[in-house]
Structures are given as C-alpha cells and as structure tokens.
Image (cartoon, rainbow, N blue to C red; front, side):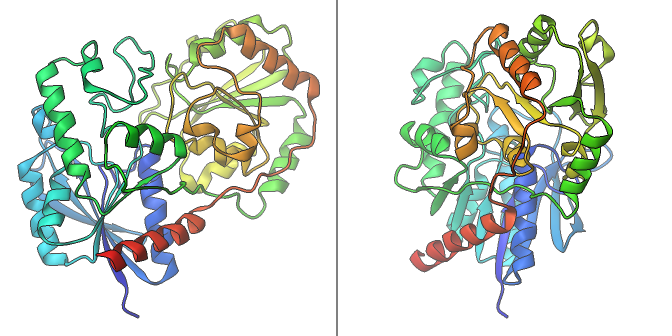
Length: 405
C-alpha cells in the first residue's frame, strides 16, 4: 500500500507529552497509523542544558518517529514565533523525508518558519488551531490580571493594555496573519474557535471545523464504575484543573465553603509534572472528604473517571474545546460547567444549565447542593467522537487538500 506520509509538528510530542493539544496531536497521529494508510513523522522541541543548542535527537514511540530539536532557554521575543535556525533544520528534515503533507499543530517556540519552509517546497499544509496563539501574543486571551480578554473579533489596537511592546506585538500579529495564508486548510476544534479566529482576520475562507476526538471508555469501565458506587455510595465530585483563578478554583472553594452538606467526596487531579499544584492547605477547613490524585496518562483515565460522578469545569475564560468535558460525558459523568466557549458545543453540554463566567460562588453552591439532593440518579453515556472518528474526518480533509493541490 502506498501510504500518505505526514510530517506532524507540535511543540511537544511523545516521549515529552504535556498539555491537551499535545494529547490530541499524538492520539490523532496514532489513529492515522492504525488505519494503515498513513505514515507519520513528528518534529517537536526540547530545552536540555546537556545538549548542544539546535541539535536534533531522534526517538520513536507507537510506530511514530519524533525528531526533537533542542532550543536554547533564553530566546528572543521574535524567535518565539519566527526562528530562522529552527526553520533551517525543518527544511533539512523535509528534504530528507519528502513528506506528502505537513500537519502543523501548536508551534509556539517552533515558529512560523515551518509554513514558509513547506510552502517553498510546494508541500501542502494543514494547520490545526488549538488555542489563540495565532491572534494573541499571550496565547489564551487572558489578561495579566488573570481575567479573560473578551475581544470578539480581536483587534490588535485594543491589545495595548496587555502588550509589553505594542510595536513588537503589532509586528507579530501581522506576521502570523500572513503566515496563516500559506496553509491550504485551517482546522478548528469548535465553531466558537472558527468564528473568533476567522473574524479576527486569520486565514479567512480557509477554515473548517474538525472536532477533536477523545479517548472513549474501555471494556470494563461500567463495571468498575458500578463497583465503586456500590463500595462507596457517596457522591464524588472531580476537578482536573489547577488551583488558579482562570480555571475557577477560587469560585469552587468559595462554593464548598457555603455548602452545608458534608457526605461527599472530591478528587483533585494534580496535572503538574512534579506534583506541586495542590497541597492540603488548598482544601483546609472544607466539608467532605478531599483527596489529591496524581496526573494520569491517557491509558489510565478510566481509573480516574470510574471514581467520580460529577465533573466540575468552572473555567473563567472562553476555551476552544473541552477535552475533559467530553471524556466525562462519554463515561456517563455529569458535568457542572461555565459557559466557556467551545467547551459547550456538545449536545449534552449545550443543553445543560450553564453557569455564566464571573457568577458568584452561590450559583455554583446551588448546583452542588442540587447534585447531592438528586444523588443517586441514572447517568447514561453520551455519544462522543473518538480519535478513530477524528482520523476518518481528518482523512477526508487530507484528500480534499491533496486533490486541490
């Protein structure tokens, strides 16, 4: 079989996995390899003092070779989005690998040179937007004071309060917009992301919505879930975000302080690499039984979700996609969430009683109390797209791009 060869670029990639977008990039790549008609090669970054800067190491996992470029720690503002030395190394890789297509995921620190390099070699490009890096130098449209920007569309002249150097910010904004025009197709994980980024002048007319897949529950999940509920019938809440304002932790803590009930459990997942996000001080004085859990890998997520009944998703900014929300819904887990952009674009989430961003803690407290009063109740798994589904949809995008090219 003549396999399509895709060069995939993401700032992180296995074995150095970090962040939801990296998980999506990895899982989509594995799903494409599993199809049998694709060969995937990855390129990513690391920053390791023991290696010479701008050297390339090679690793392999799950049948995917990863070329890792070692970049220096202290790079300039300009090099964080357009690094000629990284671009030159990417050009050497393309000349040696001869990919049929370049798939650009999150390239903060890799830079836009990958688009220029591929375009110069007439290699078709699919760009997948995962966050707001292409229209916001702060990447997530979160102001220095920790609040959501709220621009829609984004206009660079309105960024003065956030930009350290407005001239540099403007140059970056215009450069990224020009580079976006080099992509043959731009995919977005939600209609919200598509509308906001496109209306901000980025790659108009080139975008399509390509919803991310999630890891679906494995065989035996329902049995494990039922066994836990039989063993401990108390309602269990779960929170996967860190103890930050933007993820809603102050609101969550204040809501539990208002709660009068105490016959429940709460599991906090420490998503940090070194287990330093959460300490017992964060939950001191709160009713209920609180437990801090270490971060879990994709293959172990069923073990966490089998332990909870309600996922708390109190994001205080508009996100492009809700990975954990869909993971929970696919496993019959209720979700209490804010009206946070692309996170609500699933039928079950969209029809839920969404909490407006910035609502007082009492709003969440009432939802917590209602969940406790209604427990136990039947919880059905919601149909959610898996990574194989995303791979099928992405395959069609690839075929359309190659046919047009």
